[in-house]
Image (tube, rainbow, N blue to C red; front, side, top):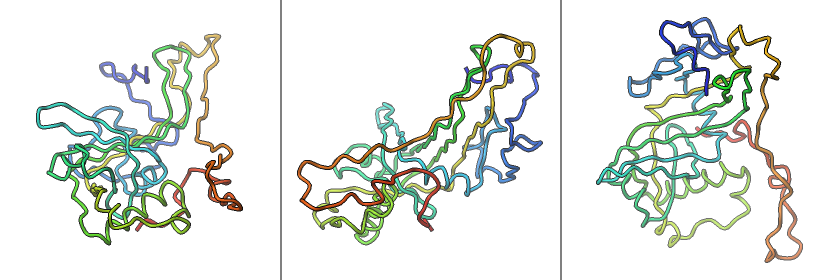
Length: 252
């Protein structure tokens, strides 16, 4: 139910508001790294510049990792992630089959999405959503160097809660040994963005149905202390004032 009329025959594609005359949001002229990541549907919503891709990865808390097992069974798993420079770090149990498959060289797809609003149109089939999403394709490398593993752990913790790392015990050698970390490159990547109001047919504009956007975002509630929390430990500011948005830490 997403603006389907623009895909019929020779119907004109109407860019989202904020797009340039070529249909690229904000006038980006970056081209895809390969045809593998070139958008084939709603091309006017595609972005290939690293600034856009990095910003979405840095704001999103959750990503989804997709692989196909040796017998062809597809698997898609939610994971916490963190970007540092030109890679995205993922972590899990050293015995987990998904990361073991990545370590063995299985091709993978990593996605991250941000839902910014629900788009209510006058026609049922023209309802949509405002979103920002990223797709990465490639093969991850295993991170075996202990120093890089510690850096990756720090990045993941700081990605989830900036400022947290300095307050907690770092991972022990045995914890690092039991954890597998892989690095997914960002060289084959694309972003897709929809923003703005509904794209109704002009003939429907006079229908007596409300149309517009319901904005959505992530907001944090009041932190709930652990029942076993030691006496006198105050709630840190990064917990009481938690919010998501543009990255507050350099990730070069």
